Length: 428
Ligand SMILES: Cc1cc2nc3c(=O)[nH]c(=O)nc-3n(C[C@H](O)[C@H](O)[C@H](O)COP(=O)(O)OP(=O)(O)OC[C@H]3O[C@@H](n4cnc5c(N)ncnc54)[C@H](O)[C@@H]3O)c2cc1C
Image (cartoon, rainbow, N blue to C red; front, side):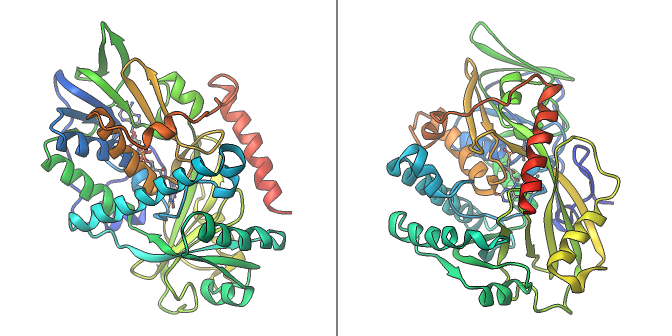
């Protein structure tokens, strides 16, 4: 039987279809290293790989298996830009910084695709993305966005779609209009995790699975990390734990919170060629976004229902099937072969969290549902920064990220109320 993540519910279609997912040993004993990394998702693995390439001694520990966090269980949509639309960033940060952030995300996109190509990692890349609107009142925003991206961001790949084209491209009459982005696409994230770990190990990074960090502190300028069977003593450390940080480090936990998102994979839909005939990924305009796409083998991978507590739901299929049926009534009784959840690390401002949280300890995460390309790139940027190369990570470090108010017990409740409000607003 394929491995199933112990930190998130359900076995994913990705876990079931990734060929040859190797296990890495648990750390047994104590180690000295130059850089210690906690967390084996995209951020941590890319950082480990690139540090090793810079000739820097690096040790990475993962509490479970690589990709068991968000990196191996997500929607696989690469997207374009940051989590927010550039025109929103312009209002707050000015045109120049907004353009720099957009350019950074284009670099991230290139980095991910080049990385997979250069290492012959087959990530099932499929091109194209559709953004679709569930409200008629967003029309001018959609039209403006395509124009602004072309004129101010040198990104001519987004084109407004009228309702007729939107219906044709999604195979659903639910959405009012949308836009098509020909400059991005979607991937099988677990294939990327497995390939990434292989390349990192081959580059000389010391990689350990099943090794949770139970404590981190700095003593006389050194970072000391405790694990069940030994300690790591390092010059520097990277916390790449994202929404799974838990009680390990409080400052990160105050700024990056987990929300649960669920995905279902239907049976193969050879009998429904009308559904997304162009093979693009799709994301809608809801605050609690619905995101879906066809897999390479012809299933509908549909994500959407979010939950704001850590509890695992008893029924994952039912709510996903109901959401699918809203868009595709012909699939009202469709078989869901796989259903799974994962924790999305979000911040208050929905901007990535990049901060020094203790002397020589950097925390990087909280990509707020937009981390497939950004987490890979930020991991690499962290490594470049340690190697003495100034880079775009500085831009994110400088950004103000407010903490979620309240203590550890109150924060999840507050988030539940706030996000339930947004979910309600999506309906009207
Ligand atoms: C259901 C879902 C759908 C998503 N869809 C998309 C999408 O379509 N497009 C997109 O861009 N983004 C999406 N995301 C977000 C994206 O997956 C993340 O932003 C990205 O994977 C973050 O990578 P990471 O390495 O920072 O964190 P993670 O992949 O979450 O990795 C953190 C790791 O740290 C480990 N860890 C935590 N604490 C410890 C400890 N004490 N000791 C050792 N290890 C520890 C965890 O076990 C985990 O493996 C989605 C996320 C989810 C959950």
